[in-house]
Image (cartoon, rainbow, N blue to C red; front, top):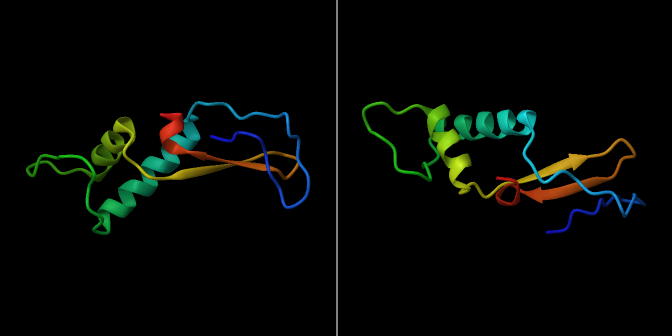
Length: 89
């Protein structure tokens, strides 16, 4: 996993990103995945057929680390870091 920022030009090569999912990123990922599940995407975890809730399913998928997503963290100088979601959970 590469946590050094990259940019179309230059960036602070020594800067590192926090290796924890922030509450804002967590909300965004759960909301995004819940929307996908609502629109018919297959769930990646086993769920009850009686009480199927997209938010609950998305939360379980995030906690299990099964989501194949990456986050792009942007810095004030315009640089960014792409981090795999499995590295943050």
